[in-house]
Amino acid sequence: MSKFATFFKSDSENKESKLAAFSQKSTKFFSAMLDSKDTCRVGGCNFKLISVNKFACSSCSQAVCKEHSSEVAGEESQRICDFCRDDKIRAEKESKTLEFKENLFQEIRVLQEDRVSKTREVSKLGSKIRKLENEYKENQTKFSVEQEEMKEKLEKQRLLLAEIEAEYREIKMQLEVTQITEGKASIKLDRANKTLGALKVEVQTLEGEQSDKQSALDELKKTASNNVPIKMIKESLCKLCLMKVSLTHAIMFKNIVPTADEKKPQSQDDMKRNICTCEVY
Image 1: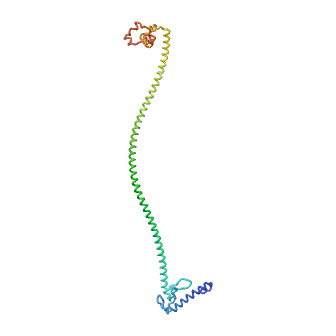
Image 2 (image 1 turned 90 degrees about the vertical axis):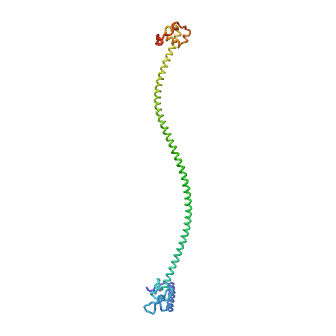
Image 3 (image 1 turned 45 degrees about the vertical axis):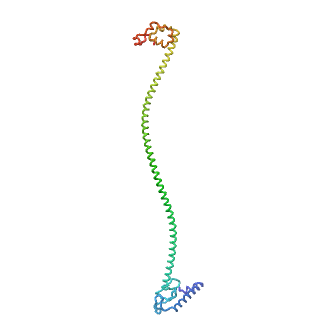
């Protein structure tokens, strides 16, 4: 489809804008063609030659050949000279460079602010680190002093523990000796208790016998005092038994005058023999 077909199919507003643009460009082109020289602005090519095409630059509107111009992308075919192209590229580069510099300066400012804040943080951290170092040194000194004190206390406790262990061993030895002694004493005590029990039984038996004899003797005394004359008792007893009876019952023989035979002392043979002849006792 040709450009004219596209032109006629478009609406009225587009037609007017396109006509105005076309008239303006055609005016620039023809005025450039009439005013310009017969040579290219860039390379000095002669347009009178058949092989050299003549164009008008879309930027500066001066004559330029095809070799020293470039086609501009768009709806209509346009060309731009190398000078204007270079200026345009240079301007774009300068714009990009300026934008890059602005962005770079902005990043530098942000980095500087970040650096200032980080410097402040580092300064604060340095202060904290110095404070912590001082506290660490103080705590280290304090810990060293406490460690020495604990060593002294531990040494004292060790010596005290050694003394306590020695005392414990001595007390344990004494306890073992005491236990052995107590065991022996317990055995002796058991034997003594058994012996004492046997003696108690014998004592009780003897006391019973003595009580019986005392009762019999009391009965005999009573009977003798009531029924038997003292002289008859004296006649029936031997000297040994008479002496025992007279000593035991002195009241009974108090008023009895001893006979001549009784006054005679016992012979040495009788005293040596000490034998009862009446067999009363």
